[in-house]
Image (cartoon, rainbow over all chains, first blue to last red; front, side, top):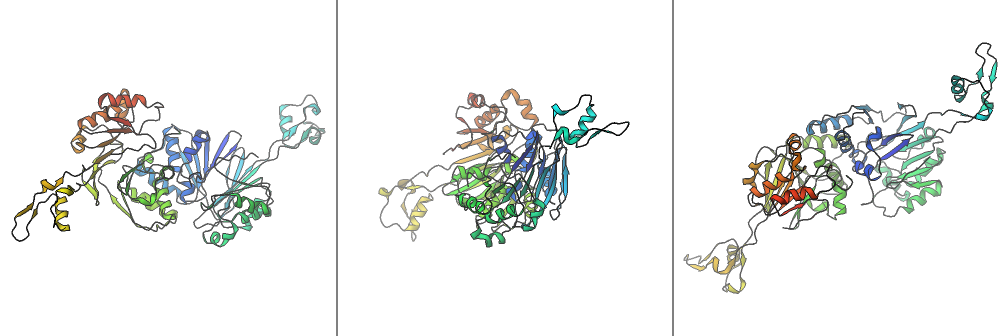
Length: 289
Length: 289
């Protein structure tokens, strides 16, 4: 349908941007939504069906033409490197920047990435070809100092230790000088985001997703078509909501709707009947956590 | 730029549609311009730079998903089959329809295709990688019968012979019964279209393009950048117009403009200074011959 684009999501944490899947037209959408591709340093591809990665060649080409020199990290299933290498060979492309490709094992739940802000774990999906979701978790943040409660004479090292949850002791005697709980408050909670597409409904994912702030889950069909969903290795809106409920997710975003549904309201209603805090993941939507 | 799309052109002759190049987003553009991909039976790819073929995978996938069973003919430079095969292997795609791929020799001018309506010849381009243009020529059409001049008693075979330029003779005696020139008028002229992108300016193409009704030629740069054009194996608007003039083309369409030109008027002015009947090949443009 004209107003439905292929899968691509940008996760923004602070000034960093992570791209999750890259369907055809992604570079055009980035322009449209004024997201600078220069700021994307890591890309995660779920699987090698075209609607999830056919925009990658064009995006990499554009990054190259725009003079990118910063390395780019790319995570994806086996074969993605072969496909890219074949393309680059025939187009005579030698990228100006380093493309660091890491093959992900789509059958395992394990940490594959870490930077200053967050960790990324794979989530094994069940689809017609190897496919994995990704779980993004912010690292624990620092405790907040209550400035008016701080005694004078503390060094920068003392302050850092306090934000990390430690008490301040006298370095010579070991005597407690400042009790952490007296001068700090809890850190801003760390946020988490799970991307699950494309997959059969997998209740076994619930423990891995426990308490996630936002769960994006595919909902290709209405539940009346759950047999077709099973046949094509997709989920229904009802199933997506069930998983959100079982995982005690705080919020659910459903997407990847079959083009047979011109009106998406029934899909949303079906999900909200099970999990009220559900929304439609439509084109251009931004969710803030 | 947001309003500039990658190269893709649809040539319509009668009820047949031929697709020339297939940049990223082509399937989306076809939807937008209400061109049914079901009617496309032949695709010609000029070269393997992304802006000319990255939309092909998605278009083929969509044709497959929409249940196409009719064979599709595909012409393109060496390597395109390898790229497609690699993609299809990893995505587990087995097309429902036959994709008949023909490798074109981009260094030769020769006929590569023929159907009821037209012939297609390759046009050797000079680009950084193997690249060819395509020349579409309608076949000679039938002469028009002047009904009021036709004697009675002619058989359907006689009428067919007359439209093909023959006289009608008495089958027994060989005596001339009807002189063709007395009962027919010239056929509707056959039209021709040449697609030339991406390439250095090649004056040697002029004889191959002689009298073409419409010449599409790339004009990536203004002539003040002709050194950069030569370096990157592209042409200037001035050069495109020179070729149109040398070839005695009837009309020129320029395109493939560098994104540095926000305003295209100077490119058009430069072309029209040499070849007045020039137009800009911009997004969504339709030219009727």
